[in-house]
Each structure stands twice: as C-alpha cells, then as structure tokens.
Image (cartoon, rainbow, N blue to C red; front, side):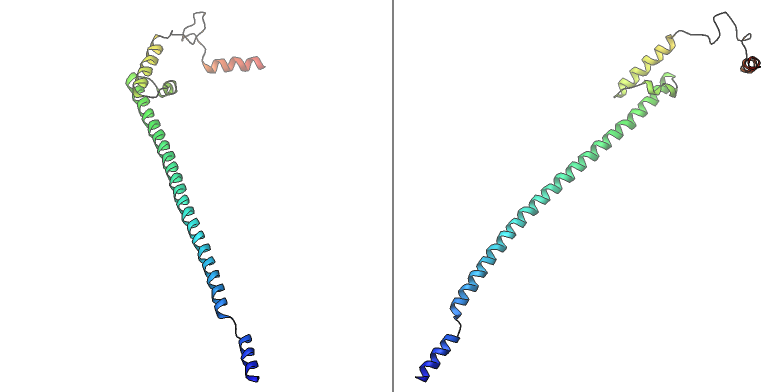
Length: 151
C-alpha cells in the first residue's frame, strides 16, 4: 500500500503538462491573432499617412506654383508698363494710371492716356487777371508780403 500511496502522491504533485501546453498554445494563438490585427491596422495607417503626405505635398507644390506664376505675371506687367511709358513719352508718375492684365491692354491704355494728356486743356498757374510771368510775384515776394501782414 505504501507504494500505491506514493504513486498517487507523485501523480498529484506532477502538473498536467498537456493542459498547460494547450493553455499556452491558446494564449500564443490569441497573441498571434492580436499581433496580426495590429500589423494590419499599422499597414492601413501607413498607407493613409503616405496618401495624406502626398496630398499635402501636392497642395503645397500647387500653392507655390500659383505664387510663382503671380510673381512672374507681376514682373512681366511691370516690364510692359515701363516699356509702354517709355514708348509713349509718359513719366513714371503716370505708371499707376495704367492698369491692365495683358501686354496689349497696357499698350492700349498707355496710348489712351497719352492722347488724354495731349488733348487736356492747358492752364496757366497765374491769375485770370492777365498777369504774366514777368509781373507775377516770386515766392520771396509772397513771403515778404506775408511777413508784413503779421506786423
């Protein structure tokens, strides 16, 4: 009997390796499934991030290209205005009066401005009383008269 008791006792103390193996295998399968789930989500997020970065880069490139085109147009417009001013005998003070978007419009408006300036009525800076430049007072005389009035 002692042998039977010893065998029972040994059997009770010995763990159930098969059950432990099956439990570990179940945990391993669950961990593998969880890892595969996270790996799949990571791939999806990576693809989304790349697509977003490309869209962002494309939008930034398009914005820079638009800005460059606007700057080039402004440079060309300034060159056209200066050429039209020179060709029509206008001054740089007349440049802001020429507003256009194309070279043809600039030339047309510069010619129209020149025509208006040439056809504008001439006026004399002297009084209507018929004073001539010789009879007009110099700035010094005007100042002297002003000072006399203060006394």
